[in-house]
Image 1 (cartoon, rainbow, N blue to C red):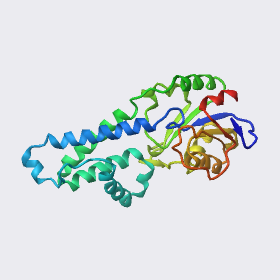
Image 2 (image 1 turned 45 degrees about the vertical axis):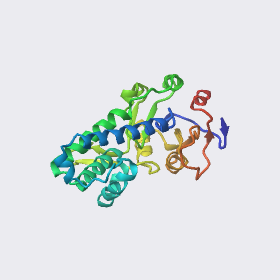
Image 3 (image 1 turned 90 degrees about the vertical axis):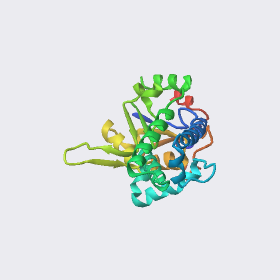
Image 4 (image 1 turned 180 degrees about the horizontal axis):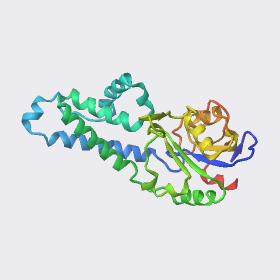
Amino acid sequence: MQIYRRLTEIKAISFDLDDTLYNNRPVMLAIEKKMVQYFTEKFAMLSLESVSELRLKPKQVFNRRFWAPYRQQAISVTPELTHDVVRVRYETYRLGFLALQLSVEESIKAAQAGLDYFISLRSDFTVPKASHELLANLSKKFPLVAISNGNVDTKALGIEHYFTHIYHAGFQAASTQGESEYLLRQKPATDMFTLVCQQLVIRPEQLLHVGDCGFADIYGALNAGCQAAWLPQYGVGKKLRQIPHIELAHVTELSEL
């Protein structure tokens, strides 16, 4: 552990999930391959007559490069979708299927099926034992909170019970009557940090946020007035824009607090 700024009173700890409590990169690489196979097989099952009507290139590969323009199209229509990884994926699939000449109804059905399959894969891995032990021990001393820009299912991973609150960026169900929904913006926006402090009834400087990304996690936490612990262990987060309070070689070093 490297200390860059003196830590002050900590009354709660918030965690990023992906690439903080586990290595998410191999999970996503495996999912990418499975999704390509899924869509390839889906179109292969269509009748020959239907295939002839689709705008498919020979040996079309349904990878990120294929879906990218439809994702951009979805965001250009509804910019707020950048904060909701679930909805933007659904819209990306739907627009892609429409472009391939599927009907409106077929596109909706295929997009939902693709999203459901992706979500089933998204949380199909095992969190390291060391992370379980750390969360179990820290939860005896501090309220723990999960703050994620992604959509991993903490219940499916078996870590939900460690957290007092779990926040995922995106559109949320209405909290009051008269509202249809509201938006929690992705980090580095301060929305989730502010909500944590309000619900735990603590000052921002009493929250220590732990994350891998120098932009989303560290810049976001510091901008919200919180303390920050940077974990560059897996080497996938963006570079630092501001100096964190501490740097961790491994998340288990938090047990020293």
